[in-house]
Image 1 (spheres, rainbow, N blue to C red):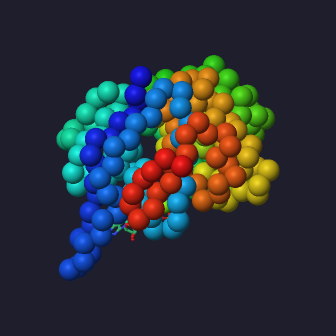
Image 2 (cartoon, rainbow, N blue to C red):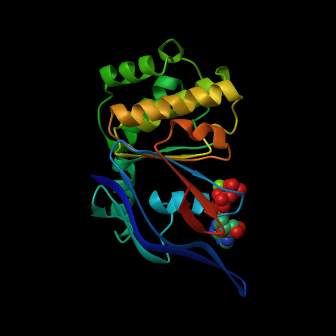
Length: 222
Ligand SMILES: Nc1ncnc2c1ncn2[C@@H]1O[C@H](COP(=O)(O)OP(=O)(O)OP(=O)(O)O)[C@@H](O)[C@H]1O
Ligand SMILES: [Mg+2]
C-alpha cells in the first residue's frame, strides 16, 4: 500500500523578478514499510520536497496523497489535523522542547491531540530506543544521540503512518549517526511506516530500501 504518493508535484518560488523552480515535476511514492533516503547537494530542493509531503507548504501544482487521501488540497485546518495524526517529523536539531523532560515531550503530544498519556506505549518506545532511564531528564542533559532518539520516540509515539526526517544525523558523530539510522530503519519495518530521510551522508543509505538523488529540483532513483 502506498502511504505517500506525489502526482505531478511542482514548487516554484517567486523571488522578486526571478522564478525559482525548487521542485520540478515530480511523481513519487513510498510503500508501507519502505525506508527511503534522499541525498543531494545543498539548495537542490530536498527540504522543499519533504515539507511539501509533510503539508508544511503546498505544492504549486500537483497533488500529495497521504495514506491514500488527498492531502495537499485539504483546507488548512483539516490539513493541520491530518498532519498531526499521520506524520511524525524528526529534524536536524531534534526540535525537543528545552524545558520538558523526555517523558513530558510525549505527554505534550497527548495535550495537543487531547488524548490520555499512554504509559505502556511510552515505556515500550523508550525501552526500544534505550532511553527509558533518561525519561526524567531534560534535553540539555542528554547527548546528541540521546536527543535524536528522544525525538524519534516523540515522532513515533502517536503512531503516524509517515515519518519525515530532515538531516536527522547532522549533529551526530559517525557511530551515533549509524545507530539513529539503524533505529529508523528498524521502526519503519516493524511498525509498517513509510519513512523518508534526507541526508548529506551517502554512507548512511546502507540501511535504506530505496535511494533517490535530488539535483536542481529533479528527483531520480540512484
Ligand atoms: N521560501 C522560499 N522562498 C524562496 N526560495 C526558496 C524558499 N525555500 C527554498 N527556496 C529555494 O529553493 C531551493 C531549494 O531549497 P531547499 O531548502 O529545498 O534545499 P535543500 O536541498 O534542502 O538544501 P540544504 O541541503 O542546504 O538543506 C533553493 O534554491 C532555495 O533557495
Ligand atoms: Mg534542507
